Amino acid sequence: MSRIKGSKNRLWTKEEKLEIVLRNVEEHIGTRRLAKMYSIDGGMIRRWIRTYLEFGEEGLQSKKKTGNRFSALHTSKSLTEVDRLKLIVMKQEIEIERLKKGYIVKGVGASKEFVTSRDLNSK
Image (cartoon, rainbow, N blue to C red):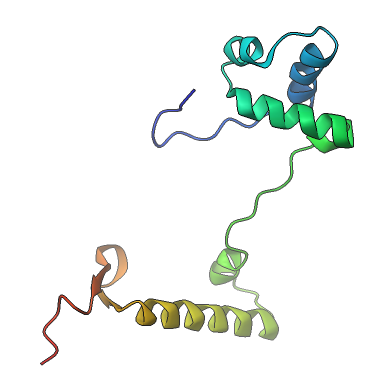
């Protein structure tokens, strides 16, 4: 069950997950059949069932996914001094790792590209 490239991931509510899990647990409908019925990956259903059996209904509650915890800081206008310093340190650590791998930045903004330093003449 794949999605179209560029489309958003399907978000399942706690109630939808519970309905699917209970159909497996109480009505003994197999995960393959449920996967076809709901157009969902069977592995995801099995993970929901395992979570439900271990933690109950509260285990099916969606957890907030976080990406880069400093990404909001980058655009925030009201940064505390500590947050601003954390952001600077994070940027410097990323830059250090990039340089260790031998990449340099060529261009700016949207036309920025990373080029390996092996490809460039060092003179």
